[in-house]
Amino acid sequence: MVYFTHADRWNVKRKRGLVLKIGIYGGTFNPIHLGHMEAARFAASYLGLERLYLIPTGIPPHKRLAAESPGAEQRLELVRLAAEAIGPQVHVSGMELRRKGKSYTVDTLRALKKEHKKDRLYFLMGTDMFLTFQNWREPEEIAKLCTLCAFGRSESDTEELFAPQRKYLAKTFGAEVVTLVLPQIVDISSTQLRRTLAEGAGREYLAPTVYGYILLKGLYGVRADLKRLTLEDLRCAALSMLKHSRIPHVLGTEETAAALARRWGADEEAARRAALLHDCTKKLDREQHLHICRQYGIELDREELGADKLLHARTGAAVAKHVFGAPPEIESAIRWHTTGRADMTLLEKIIYLADYIEPTRSFCDLTELRQLAYEDLDRALLLGLTMAVADLKENGTAVHSNSVLARDYLKGKLT
Image (cartoon, rainbow, N blue to C red):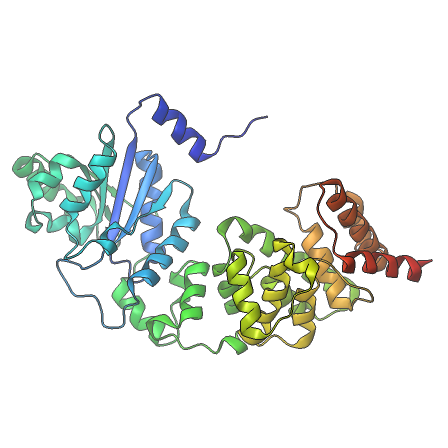
């Protein structure tokens, strides 16, 4: 069976010269919350959009950015994290953040129309923007460039409120307007949310990765002690550090590590924390890894220097210790989760195996290893190490000596 990604379908339609539906959703997104995300998700589905641009505003024409607002790059990163959670058709653009002067919608639409000459543009907006559209810069030009799509974001935003404005804009500017009421209302404004976050609440209005980034950077008056995070907050922070595609693996590793900890009498919370942080530096490039090594005085061996994929275990352990206050047993479990080592601790064994056998892993048949992990931990570890070494050799990849030592140590112990 052949599976086509969203990008594959986009490219096929583009090559065929088909008219594509492109959505544009702008705003200060300060911060972007579940209300914004639900509106974007529903509009994309309802309109059948092939692509939806989320475009954070640089300088709003109609108001000032709040004094406590993050910088442009941080706001852009918050929107990027939210976009990944919405779906593959959502793209983030920093065009308004890069543009000098106030961020006028008409300028953004002109730029996008040049890129999408044949495509149909839909401009998404909330109720307040829709009801004051006639006061925008060049509303008649905006109406020529796109279809207006207005959605209600509170229970009072009904068709009775939309209908008169829709008729007025059609008559005055020739605007084509689509209005819709969201099936799920998240009734909070960014202004309210900033105030709530500063008071130590409000996380329920944010995607976990967005809240995690706010925690890590101390945005909007959130002043968390990263070395004393609750498990729930640590999960958000850890997930915000990952590529979105790696999140299912890390969550799968967490649950598998917790199950193994319960089975073998280890500390379940320690297992969860180690699992959540085991790949926390995985997305960094080589130079970023080497910078962390210099920062924390990590001496890499020759084998590690020659294999970039081994670096995240060393830097992840350092970040777990120095940023998140992980105790030695958790630091060590992260340190050895890739290669293993001779005479591993119980937690080290659990994290090594959980990383290997969690449910999303499908690179080989893991049926026997998954069963053995709950029957005989050492024999499961030996099997896992043996499989890993064989797989690396088969792919022509260098095997770290610690993996061989770990395998041979277990062979001797079990025989």
